[in-house]
Image 1 (cartoon, one colour):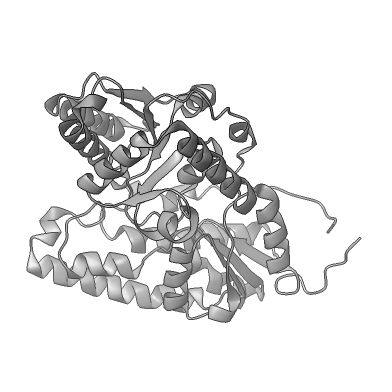
Image 2: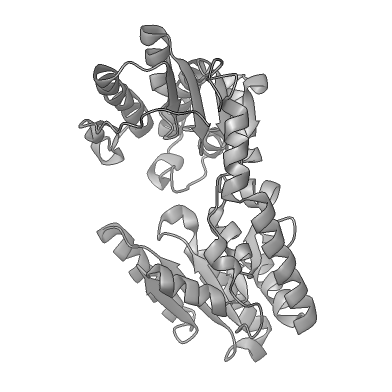
Length: 366
């Protein structure tokens, strides 16, 4: 192993990269703000290697040109992607494209121009990286397209600490659908309620047997408002007795839901990876995830994928209709996939292999 002292330096310029500081041009504001944070870091220390895992690509040229650092990064999610450009170009309302902009052709044109310029600059600063690690095939495709560094880019799945979930028994599971996600717009909890309503409409025999529990954290008043809206939607759909909200649940409470559950549901479109889906699988839940990005391309090799409320409802019915032996076989197999492909040990060995020789060419080994 490489020996050396580990020193933590605490920075005081954090506010410069908070999204709340930039109600407009948020991507640009945070990216320029990261330069302030990076400059403060350089004033505290003068490193030989700079490794970014927060997504501050605008800081790469600063470390490369001013200090001559070797630059590496682990990209969880591109700051901008071609998907974001497509949403604006098609004038589709979404969580990152307000309806006030999508409905206005002039605003949409201006935002598209802004995104294109930002994407070009993002590609330029990203090209300063010597080693690029990405967390999924979806992220890899976007980063390779934007930064143009295919030979320096490698896919490395994030470490998932699932040991505490892998010991949960697979037997005696309830007809419980578990959803684990923060109450943010992109997680699309309303789609889960719509799917459950459709399931009950087409299969009324499940109405008194199947329950959905939404497990998630509430960070602020905006999240509280989203939860209240979901409660109103559940009541309007006649689901108030079939839906439970577990707000800010402890790990023990979460583990209890996962131990009881049969299906793990995920509805975010273009989730860059989907660690929650991996946790479902490790806990022995049958995954039902959105048919896009990380879950589709990297995680759900066994399980179910869907996009529309009908597709989700149909998949729920298929899983619920499986005989116990078939269910338990799928549960055991998805657990094996989670433990073998997404472990901390697999991540650690892959990370060391990627940076040795590229970021630390003269490291001495024991």
